[in-house]
Image (cartoon, rainbow, N blue to C red; front, side):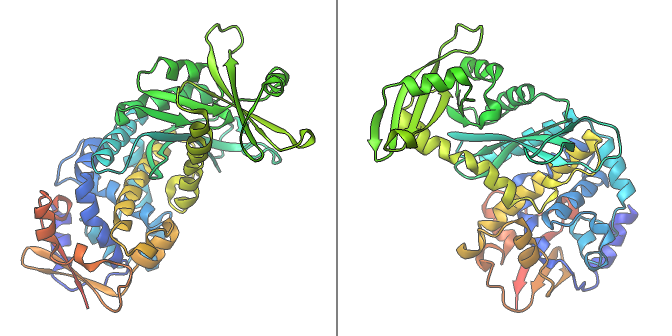
Length: 430
């Protein structure tokens, strides 16, 4: 219990925290049920160190700083208090923590987080976008190389697979694999696990990389999900697209429908054909295969255009640990990315409590302007940790943080924070 003694001793003094803004994430972790999720993953209890170590990794990711322990400017007194510890945890300790947990355990943690996010309204769940996100790896081991970009040489990389709620832009699930894992296999698994979370009728939109017979078979047999993705235009498909009798929808835009079958497969799928251009030399053709019966114009013009929400998510959150792959030890990498997903979920909730013009800040901007807010101090008064911000706080809606214990109790949450040894938390703005 020396860690608790150190924690209480530090709180007995007023600490000028270098990352006072990070304390704004604490109530969001409470709303997410993050502590129970971390205890479930580590298999430990409230008084143990391991869940606090995991929380430190999540907060590092929220700060968009890799290996925060190496940054003197971020290692002053204050950051360790946020995680309920009297000192920072070393790289070696974090390595052993992540290495002690299997990919299956981490996948269950992500499943639990996604279920909680669904309850909190982070997903609409009627339109889901999925896409691989390949991370260049600096691993020294001998491994298969793949091309991330057509015009660049093949490189070592780790493959991640995301499903994202296209309406809100929030990630639902993350899978991970080596370069040897087939996209078809990973995509089918991703659809299966995503369906367990969303559990309502939805359309999955994907790019040409998912034009895979097995994936269409999986969604065709699924009672809730339909799939929509572009067809890869080989000679046969190109001739079929050009032979159709298109109907004009508006200037330069035409649609028609036909049937499509994969090689040596009698199952018929719906082919939606699109032609653009007003005169024949300018005609361009695109085809889409789907298991949905919805109107063709709605599928192409409304549903498919939202597929880019997954790319928007990658770009918006790329400053966190979701874009790093230094090691090829998959359970370590998967564990760290899962904890980054927890930090990202807390940051998403925090954004909803900022003034509107600040809600669209990306991960790096949020970390720099809000979470790294330096003009603050941390002290204890009776059973409450009080974080005081000095100077203008134009980003934050103060009504969401002042008198926080009362606000949390009104939401049905216990204002006592278990990883902070049951202290409460409150904020002051001066």
